[in-house]
Length: 353
Image (cartoon, rainbow, N blue to C red; front, side, top):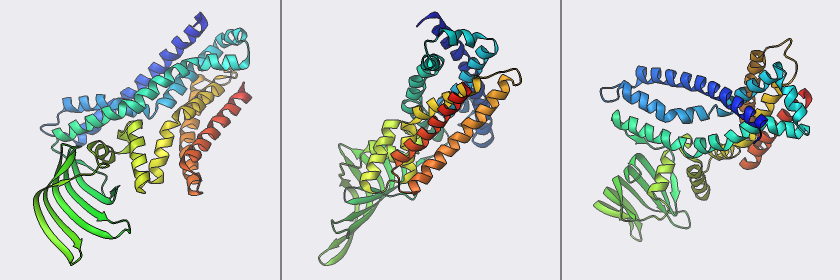
């Protein structure tokens, strides 16, 4: 990395850090105020709320990271432009693509870092923090209510998950290959031990050649190779609390079970293709950073870019959902909408440059 590239990376990183600290500070303060107003108890104190917000802050900031890096890049390059430093950078670049790559270099260096933290670490931190808060407040962690899970030839519903190895309120419907109901049961509790679920206080109604039989069992065993504690944990969490590999596991399971929703599938591909939208936001940043600043300010350019970035995010979600309604596969719908945004952002940059 030469001196000029090092200077670009240093200045952009500094500005991105300033924007990041400003937004993170705002989220932290408002979050603490919300926790204090709505959730404080004798066991969940202000100190607990501060620890909780620190643990979940990375996931909250990741939601805005594209806009944060966009603003940091825009303000830095616009400052170079206003003070004629951009002219020197342009003259030293061999071509327009080389100049573009040089200006985008800091954002490209940040991309794998923020993507790795946001998709592979932050969701776990947030989930652990929410579980710790629930424990302090004496709450249980509910499953996604009203949803049934298909595991081989069984349909399963769980009322509450204390942890991934202990369930409360398990309802099971067992079907034959002809989709006929063969047995139904309800267990008050289930504990996973030695590769199977130990069911406690079970009432079962079973179909036999003579009709239906009803029996009550204090302790019984339930083996299901698909319905494992790891899968139970994934199914119980909101998609925002799942890392990307965990979300992929949930989507694959639901697809095989025939219970996959378009919204969940779209969420997966939005997260996978986030780098494409990220690059589009960087094109928007450079488009507003170029041009004369004699009749406009850097703040004016930053505000317009911010508005465009926020609106673009909403339009991308709307367009991808609309394309899925028109029977386009989720991956293609998300790819088309994000590619269209990135392409239009590049066209805007090309016109401004």
